[in-house]
Length: 227
Image 1 (tube, rainbow, N blue to C red):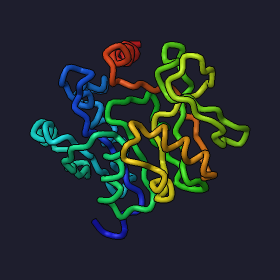
Image 2 (cartoon, rainbow, N blue to C red):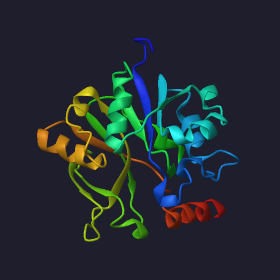
Image 3 (cartoon, rainbow, N blue to C red):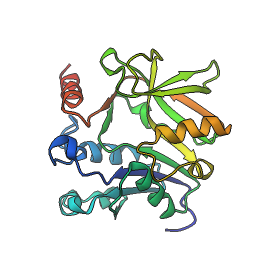
């Protein structure tokens, strides 16, 4: 990979799909024709990303290669990891980019502006969506200040009433210094960034966000496509 790669899309997909009985969630239909959730993300970022790196569990390598993701510029890196954070750090180490955006492979967005990422003026920028009533306690919820600065993040707390949830993030290499491989999810890294005084801002996307990693949320997503 050359030094010209300035913005890298990272997609950590090295999990074992245990929550869906071994079915890789990112290969579920996206509701947009024949594309899977993973392919839908890749198609939407292919025109502006300098590179797209996918950290993939080797057990799914054969089936993912059948999708010919390389045709959209995606590069698959097989790896076995314990946590998503470990996968992200491995992908960063394989890149020479200056900025990185993480897209979760088993998520879906309802609006095209969700794929517009702020690459300026912050060490870390979160993409937020207005949380739906059925999502309280299931996502990382964010308290947003008057000039789009992130003031607090609380993860999966049914008592939290913050009105926004994050579902994607863009960051520079300074943020990666705060990540530890043992972090089970990236929310711990965001909290560490706030505590370290990094500039953490956010953009609020239109529409809705779905975490399709559970059957109930995926069904809600598919039903939304019927409306």
